[in-house]
Length: 315
Image 1 (tube, rainbow, N blue to C red):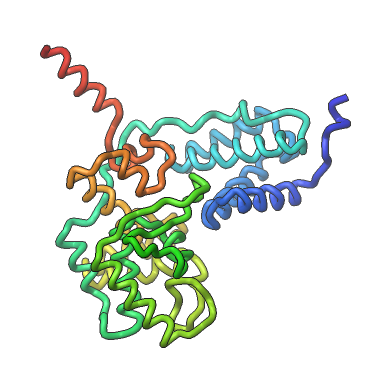
Image 2 (cartoon, helix red, strand yellow; image 1 turned 90 degrees about the horizontal axis):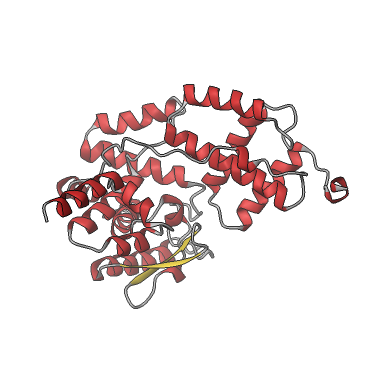
């Protein structure tokens, strides 16, 4: 009786339709590529992608736990759970396999998040040659990433209409499926206005993207921003820091908090150090849950509980 409601589909088509679904709900290109990569690797452990067994899952988990960190495993578990929940909800399989997939585990040790000191930030923002078109663009991009906590893919999708007249920038947040508004300084606003004038006169291409290449084309991916920022990291903060990033990339290890994401981490830390409310930091970063912001900043919930207990023990 159940089979009458079951829509047959090939493994290849299932992956393709799932990717289109992820695009429709606002997942970034990098997230979708990651999900596809995780699912393709998972498919090598199963005879039937749409109807895996628990033994398949146990073998895959044993392999993954020996090869990758808990944080990486969490991302892959999330990809699997979403895929099988989607298959069941759209009636591509008879039963929901997602409950058998472990929920992402808690990372017990929080690595101290890396962020730029004010001196390092000043050196990095001063590195581009602002007398050139490319140098001025790069300075504006890096400063905007620091002032707003933008992710790389959010930066390259900004348009002329993302800049509000009242001193805010409007950013589409995939996780919230809505726009968030982040304030920018008057100086930042003036720099953007100068860039817009330069952009329209020297690169008069009919596209609304705010930041483009020197040929007037949109940046192809976030990798372009990583490469640009990494060049200034090498120039301003030393060769070794940039070389470490390049070395990890050469070994096919994902980019870490060096380069562009370093601005986002610095944005969050400097706001918190200046006394900004944690909820406000969460909203400006576009996090759905404040726990994400706390983990991002290296704030351990267990530590907070211990300090809270100490306070009342002394009462």
